[in-house]
Image 1 (cartoon, helix red, strand yellow):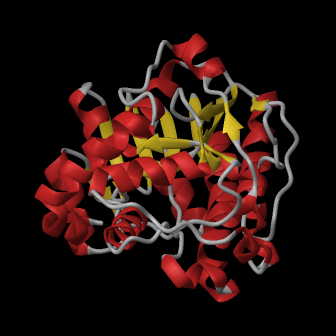
Image 2: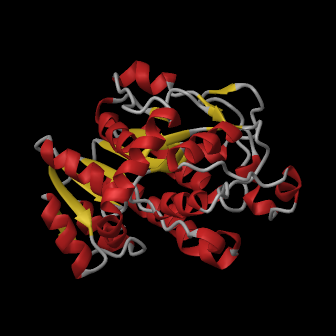
Length: 312
């Protein structure tokens, strides 16, 4: 198949590109710079420069493709996440770029549209296992992800198979967010928000990429992409501490009460179920939970961190 992908140079996207190329697909990937273009070419994709906010340019770029993967984001890092201005580009990508890609897919007769989203959209679930029909409660930060989902769902009435992948929190050896978390852990700090007893759902980056490719065979609809064993937040950081050889200091519960309301989704309990995607596609995460995943991530980050950070 001929596949068009946005976000192909990100930590998830470049893995997806590699898997698609290895499977024999012809991949066109959006590139924002000559350096990114060389990275994509090295992965076997054809880089293309296109302004995702220009509807006519998107129409021309998408024409002739069978599938669209929209994995583009611009998530702010570290302390910048508390700044509204830092989220504006990400909001615009999820709102405008997704709308332009959906419009182009209808014009071009694209067969399948795969849109990234996030499980942080869910309202606090407490002890409940959150399936795809669980209540949504978007914050200022996550509202644009909900809008991207709505943009894609207009395809339901046509001939394009529309798929939304709600990813749990990513972690991996070349993720800036993960590397920051590991750095804090090595200093004895749990880089955490919210109660230790609340559930946290995660997905290792390699497993997330494999799930995205498995979506080529999924029926239309919304799917949770998470590992098999959500853990309480305290256990998540206990496992991370064990992996770096430190006992971590968890911030007091009162610290979460001081968080900016737009980051409220970080305080919630999200015990997410991946059962629907597993059942309909046969996908299985290699790392069933953080007890398997964290040691592998720490080991790979220690070996490859300088090179990986350069590519991130």
